[in-house]
Amino acid sequence: MAQTRAFAVFLDEYAGLLRKGQLVAFPTETVYGLGADATNSEAVLRIYETKGRPRFNPLIVHCGDMAMAERLAEFSPLAHRLAEKFWPGPLTLVLPKKPDAGLSDLVTAGLDTVALRIPGHALARHLILAVGRPVAAPSANRSGRISATTAQQVTADFGAAVRVMDGGRTKAGIESTIIAIAGDDVVQLRPGAVSREDIEAFLGRPVGVVGAGNAIAAPGMLKSHYAPRARLRLDAEAPLNGEAWLGFGPGAPRPGLAMNLSRAGDLREAAANLFQMLTTLDKAGAQAIAVATIPEQGLGEAINDRLRRAAAPRD
Ligand code: TXA
Ligand code: MG
Image (tube, rainbow, N blue to C red):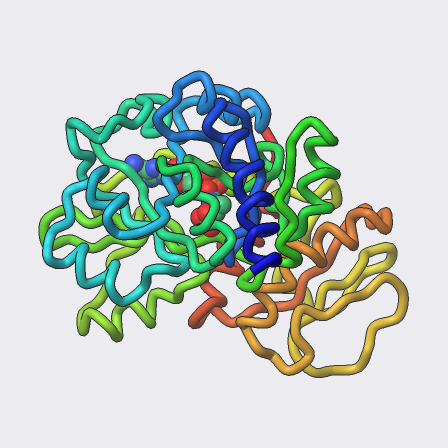
């Protein structure tokens, strides 16, 4: 009981900050989120300012339970099925926003849709339910940089000004998969911690990908993103002189500055390690990082998406 009371006091402190319009960084099962009360425009504005995020890039709204989610968006039968199967968990659904949702227009960047998810991390859900309001949260990193998978990394990016709820290292290590549903169309806007194959297997039909001739826009998909300071060279067979190495799968250990996303060649393990290892190699002073080939199946789609953005020319 004493522990339960201590937990309630701990939650209340952070929930109180959010209710007052302050930012709180919190763990989810994917990456840390930089949270604000999604109904308070001043609070949401603070997210954009703190991250240095372009205002046309809308935010994901995190809900504590299905009742909260249904107050914000219209769920078609198809949307319901996906929510029932994958929530709580790392799937974000872009759905028609209810006119009386009460969300700040800054959250949706003026769109008539809203991106929703119920996170799979119990601490996140308890926090949102304690606030009693939906919480808008992008990944807790400066815009364009590597997403934070530990509380320490959030503080390294923002300093002591942003309060962080420490929930240890995040499990999936890569952001949620974003799916847009418009009528009978299901389109993946961003690959992520739920593989497209898993969604297709559940629905029993193919899921479109954005850019492949479909009309649904993904406003925030900036080409250069998740960028470490070091340059990245992808699909490398071996490090060249002076390059650090980020390997995948078995093989002889490399000399020099080298890490392996998963010696076993496990894509789930590789996704969980990706941002952390890029940060570690960056901090170790690597000027360039050569990255081994990652297969494009399953979670490999999301890993390669992040690597390509991290390798893209800046500006
Ligand atoms: O795992 C995650 O999804 C993490 C954790 C904190 O939940 N959040 C996250 O948020 O990755 P962020 O802001 O880094 O990425 C949100 C993406 C952006 O690419 C944005 O453009 C897209 O969601 N998005 C948000 N609302 C949208 C909408 N109405 N229509 C289309 N895309 C939307
Ligand atoms: Mg992000």
